[in-house]
Image (cartoon, rainbow, N blue to C red; front, side, top):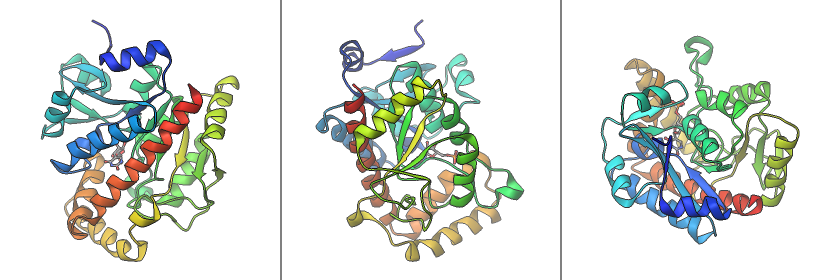
Length: 300
Ligand code: PSU
């Protein structure tokens, strides 16, 4: 059996060299509640089409890597309560045992590279969790960016993380962190983390050119493009910070660890903001999808 299963649309786009943007699925199963998760996934695919590229939502269903989901598959995945959250460590095991799972940034990058897709849009990558000096909780997304050649467009790293430490690790790993159109590193729900991004670029064609240049240099690994949430959609960090602290202390009190931390925090912040964090999350993913489509077009 083939390792990857493409929708007819994506198979054709690959044959013709049309621009394709990969999308992940953990944001669907673990990042947002039903049915907004399904609606978001459809909307983001429509945004990519409107921007002149073909969307490829990636997931593992019944032991197959799907590059692109049908409407029925997306509906089913979005309602699967016990979908695995797959990363580099468990992707092969999910396939070998016929499981269904959503791909994180790390696993989506691996699948996108296998499919020859060079650009990928998400909300926010995983990073170094606060308190990592004790817990050692560092997302596998960072290592993946260091070794898999896919340009990832995100709204920075999630503000629930320790952003200075996340930048330090990315620097150590040699991952270019490129703020798009501003000097500051964005912080997911807010445009400005208060930290300066290591790099800045203002044009999708430049980002595409540096992606190509990394390949010519023989450098493994991808680029992280940190695209700020549109100003109209951002949540002020002064409002958000105390709510993040509340969610973090609840997670600690309940002993939430490993893969459970990020979904728990996103769900609690959704509740504590009366849904405002979800609206912002959807807005930033759509914004990232549009930029990723422009980069993919510049690469095609
Ligand atoms: N972006 C979002 N929501 C999410 C994610 C990204 O807007 O839920 C997911 C991605 O799949 C990312 C994961 O890989 O969160 C990070 O999980 P962890 O911190 O456990 O590595």
